[in-house]
Length: 389
Image 1 (cartoon, rainbow, N blue to C red):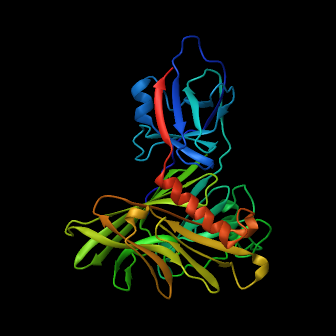
Image 2 (cartoon, helix red, strand yellow):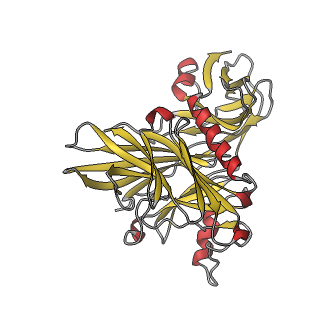
Image 3 (cartoon, rainbow, N blue to C red):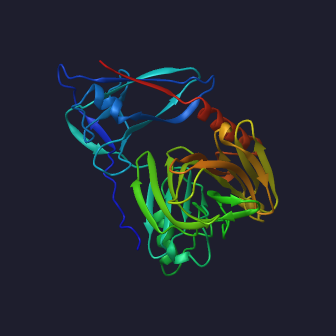
């Protein structure tokens, strides 16, 4: 039976007020090690680092300020296992090349206002899809209602607009007269075809030329809906692989301003031993150019979105830390990245899409550059230090 949707208690607070005299504050010092700008970068701070230096810090009222700033930044507290204890504090900033920036975390008094969300995730009835989006792009995976027609592939919805559209498009599909999300009514559309493929970045066990996909998800959890990150978890039924039953849990996170999902997939088994061969990738489309860069750990496709040129061009892609990439392989259906998974430990990679009619990408070169930039950021993450002021 489908897990009951768990509503996240994640907090996104604008705080207006004055810091009380003598109140302790935390300084979060963030450094960009790259000699390149990092626009719309999500800064993630372990809550344990914050609480360890300021035990009285409350998730309900913590706020993040730019250094010497008076207006708080939009921030989000994430509780991954939903045990009521915060795990991370997230906020967003655009960093210049080699820039170091200090931020203040404090608990001002005054009125608290909820920030408008840039992300969303929801379980969509009656289709039983799990859909999520940000201000750039939207995705979905299929649930039990579609089990006879699809597998675990990830679908992409192309958006022209920066506001959230998922709920509106699903409602339009059910209305009379119907407003199909397969047609562009000014906001974009679902032009992508998934079928029984991996779509844009699903994963499976692999042996030779055969993928052992697990079917549609059996249970789900909505960990967070926003305002900066949407996070979902999907539980898939076991697949029999080399005589062993192997199950899969997938966590997908999509941050504001990003075109790629962060995907963490974990395999478990009561009988299997050793490392498992894993494939992830993107489905090929007619008339597209295949792209790959093994050194930087990415694959991609670029070409017409459909057979109608007026619908623009679509890029899809996947980035994995280069050291984890064992092989890049292409067949008649997919371009794949082959890697290995240790039982109980997540394999992490990033996948997504970019559309010319969203005005974020214009050419094959711009999409390739985006994937390369993402790979370089993964190899050189932001450095975060916390101190008491």
